[in-house]
Length: 283
Image 1 (tube, one colour):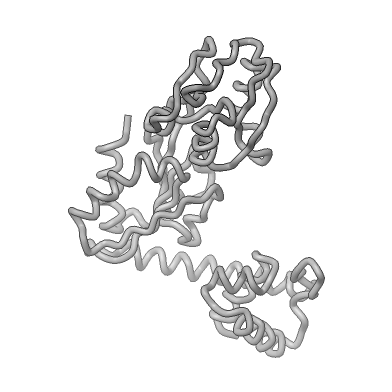
Image 2 (cartoon, helix red, strand yellow):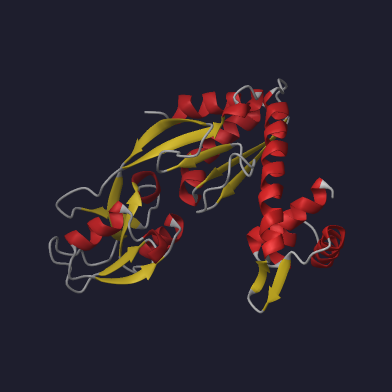
């Protein structure tokens, strides 16, 4: 049983379908199917039950999963330790952040970094999911809450104020009422975020008309006159078609945290970018 076969097995177990697993590993679906068949032949058991909704682990597959994840943890730890010893300022550096934060705050810093270190390739992933630093899905992560994973080195980067916005020609809602106003909020998966509760509290009679998990999309809908949105000030103030409005109190602010795996702390290109980010963005 080879590690490459176990990677295929883990991808299918986590993604649930051959197609999604193939995209995750950058392989074709037929190749994934052949690799899985070879692995099942090698262990002498069916590892997945094929259902209309995808691949479900059998009891034998669940047992293999436990062993495969332990092997993966050891392999990734070895890779991180090797990467963490690299002193040269070249190679790949993968960063994850939210869409608006990447566009409005990180791109100027990364452009400056690219001019100073042209041999480093920066890959910036904008995703609402928390990518794994342990699995090296990212080397450096920006989040709006403290990191709770083990072995992560993190610090609070900055205090982020938010504001309420409408399109320039949108009728201003009355604070404490909001009758007739429409709201633009985070989607239901993020419905417990402080700004969602705040907006519905200060405009209790307004109706939610649009939800999105992307702040940049909320801002664009707000510019189209679709309603009132709560946005980070660097995003809302940067868009000429938006107007910040006074609803009697400011929306709750958020903290932005930055983190990386401790095994990567000596990676020269990571340290160089981290130092620049702190110099340009930290409170």
